[in-house]
Length: 156
Image 1: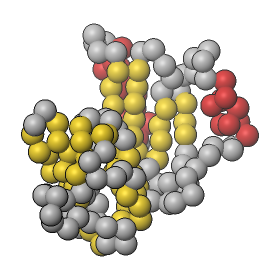
Image 2 (image 1 turned 120 degrees about the horizontal axis):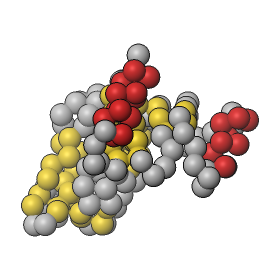
Image 3 (image 1 turned 180 degrees about the vertical axis):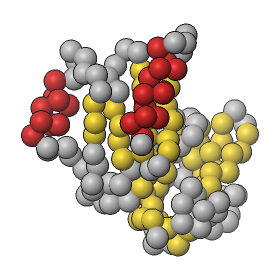
Image 4 (image 1 turned 90 degrees about the vertical axis):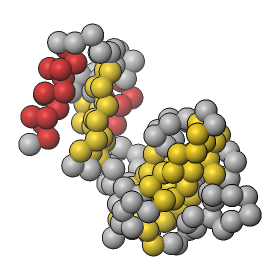
């Protein structure tokens, strides 16, 4: 079923002036680019599957790993909560307050996990799933990039 959606995404890309499209649905992230190959990655940590529709000259190592089935995975299995924007990561609302969440905390969908300051605007980042915080990948006050993993959450 997701293959049909991927074909639609490719069709949209080919018939537009857009160079790259990235969408997430059904636990999968799709990034389609006119310049590079199409890679589908399941957000399950240890059981990561990668499917390549088109391979460019610059991706022979990826093709080798697909053929041998030796796709590397993280040692911690869970879903990454990615930063939706570049900015400064804050683990609490003020420097004197306790962090929103810590390692081992249970979180609910919609619960605030951190704040990212971008252009003097404080953006609350919420959990996308119910689960348990396995890891915090960023320290308080640290600069973060777009799509950088902030937390690893084990779905419950």
